[in-house]
Amino acid sequence: MKARHFLQFKDLSRDEYEHLFIRTRWIKEQFKSYRQYWPLIDRMLVMIFEKQSTRTRLSFEAGMRQLGGTAVFLNTRDSQLGRGEPVEDAAEVISRMSDIVMIRTFEQEIVERFARHSRVPIINGLTNEYHPCQILGDIYTFIEQRGPISGKTVAWIGDSNNVCNTWLQAAEVFDFNVHVSTPPGYEVEPERAGLYGTSHYEEFSDPMQAAREADLVTTDVWTSMGFESENEERKRDFEDWRVDAEMMKIAKKGAVFMHCLPAHRGEEVTAEVIDGPQSVVWDEAENRLHSQKALMEFLLLGRVEQ
Ligand code: CP
Ligand code: NVA
Image (cartoon, rainbow, N blue to C red):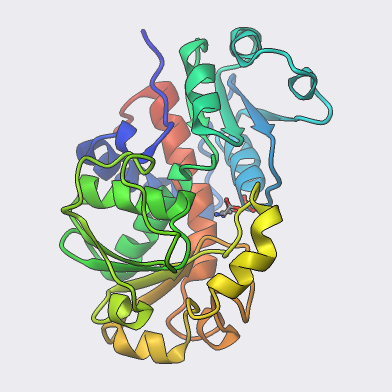
């Protein structure tokens, strides 16, 4: 059977996500009740990191172990990947020695090439273009807190980066709206975001207008990994794109605040908001663990019903 991959959000259907959310809830309950669930007892995950990580590394490694399997960490510095071995050759070899692979790297093209030469499922653990595992956990968190996301409005404030692009793809899958506000010069590039059209998002020059009546307000760092040379320029350009208490007030009553983390208090979000009552960032981070366990179960075992 051909391996299924999770390289961008639109790789799974809405129906498959609904299944993953049911499994996430069940798997989370097992974990919270200290009940063992070891369906992947003989399986091994390889995690390849070309950029830094706390949450993604830990949630995948802990998740694989909690499902009974093992995980191996590789980085560019200590492996032949950093010395120019072709991605295709690495994929051929690594996928003969493991059962599933997670990659965090630069261009999306790298994970796509890796997947074409892999015998086993490949998961995108963040590229310059997308962060599908993040939005998998984020949408689960929204549903857990507030119910279905279809028809709702998500306000994205800041850079039209990998996390933003993934929200936009998710809006097409789940039929919700994204109000995007970026500084001039940082607007959404629909083709790079992998969108079918523009019917699920609207761009606002004023971040306050984007946040108006939103059910969820979210943002991310002004400078993503790999773009550090633009840091000073971005600090100037993004100065007015900060989520603060006034912005949360203009959103719907009961709106939640999310951030994929790590966050920079005083830059893209004030401490008052991220540490305030509307913030769900810790549940959001925790749900990476549970939702990725459901994802690995699905990619390796198909639809498990329990
Ligand atoms: N949100 C997220 O992916 O965090 P890490 O960079 O710590 O993995
Ligand atoms: N947009 C950020 C997300 C980090 C989890 C980055 O790519 O650095």
